[in-house]
Image (cartoon, rainbow, N blue to C red):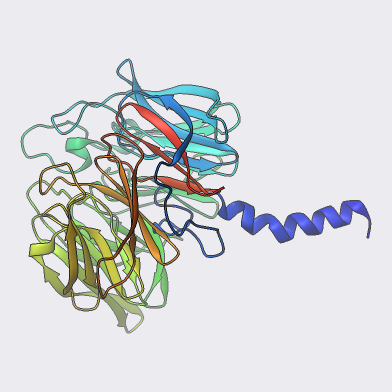
Length: 419
C-alpha cells in the first residue's frame, strides 16, 4: 500500500477519536455534559491530582474549552472582556484579544459569563453586552463580528427596574454550531434567535421576538424531529434549525426570568428544564398531525434547580438542588430518587456545580473547588472518590485526553486525571 494512501486511510480511521478528545463547547462535544462513548475516562480520582499547568487569570464565570491543541478562555483584564488561547498541553500563551467592555452588576465580580466555542480553525466568543466575534484559532485574528444591539435592535440596559434575562445580567447563552451555521440568541425584534453563515457572518434566518435568558440552546431529536431547543425569558420553545420555523412552545413566566439551566433531553420525547420560581419541569413533546405539541407532564417546585445545568443518564436527571444538595430525579415522573448534601460552600439556593458524565459515574466540580465522583445510580447516592483541585468557582470544566481543564476566581488550571 503506498505510504500516502495508507496515511489517508489511517487519518480517516482515527479522525473520530481525535475529534472526540476535544471539549470544544459548553458542556462538551454533544452539549449534554457527557464524555462521548469510546473516550477513556477515570474510574476513580487520585488523592492529590497533579496540576500540569496553571495560568493566572482575571475573574470570569465563563468556562474554558479545548480544541485544536489549544485551551481557550475569557477573563476580565483591566475592565475588558478578553479572549485568551494557550497551548492545551503546556499552558504556554498563544494569543489574547479584546472582546468588549465588561458588564458590571450586583451578581458577581465583573467578568465574562459566556463560554466560548471552538469549531475547527475558528473561535466564537460572545460578550455580556452582546458583541460576537469570530476569530482564527491559530492567531486570534478577527474574521467577522456583529453587535446584537446595533445590528438587530436588541436592548441592553443592565440591572435596572424589572429588566429580565440578557437585558439585565448580560448574554450568557453560548451560541451553537449546526453544520455550516452558527445560531445565536440575539434578542432583537423579529430576531430573538438568529442563524448566521459561520464562515462569513451572513444572516441566514431570523426568528421570534424572544429575549434571551441565561440557558444555552441545544439541538436534539425529540418526538422524531431534529430541532433547536431554547429556554428564553418567555419560556421553552422548539425551532427548526434549517429555517427557524417555530415547532412548539411552553410558556414559563417569572419575575426576573432567571432561566439559567440548559435544557436536558431524556428518552425520545421528554425535555427537562427548571426555574427557581416555578420548579423543575418535565415537558413532553408529541406529534400533533403534521406538527408538534408540548404538554407539561409534571412540575416539582421543592427540587427546583437554580443555576447549575443538570445531566441525564438513562431515565434519570442529576443536578444541584435548592438546599445545596446533589439530587437524582426520575425524568418520567419528576419524583426525587435521592438527595445528598455536604459538598457545597455557597448558601442554599446559590450552590453551583459543573457536572460531567464519565462512563458510569458523575464527575462534579463544586463551587468550593472540590472534585467529587459519584455513581450515576438512581438507587442510591454512592461516593466513589473526591479530591480538592481549585478554589471558589462557577465553572463547567472541560475534559480532554485524560485531563480536566477548569478555572476558579484567580487561575485557569489543567489537572491530570489519567496518565
